[in-house]
Length: 97
Image (cartoon, rainbow, N blue to C red; front, side, top):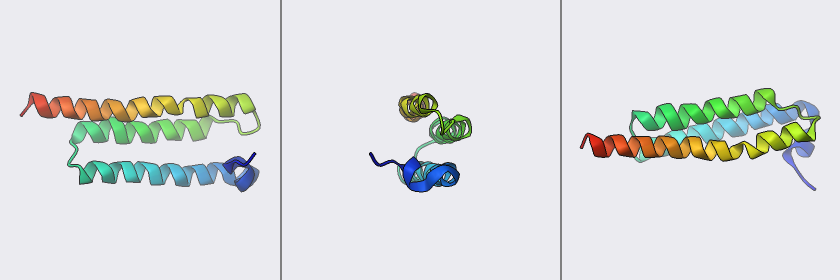
């Protein structure tokens, strides 16, 4: 089985995940800019995603499979966070239009 943990090794996994997470958050912010999203998108989706990913990287114990699985499974919550920002931004747009 191939994984980023095996590819990057013990000392490189968290820095690599930090780079990938930064690219994701930057891309999410740019997508919001390109789509003219409002402040609720940025405060909930972008900042929420950044905080969630930082929590994952900071708290994962790479030598414990259960910890890795829990953080992997919590990516469902990341999807909810991004969706919540999109919905809140849309509802604010409709309410104040």
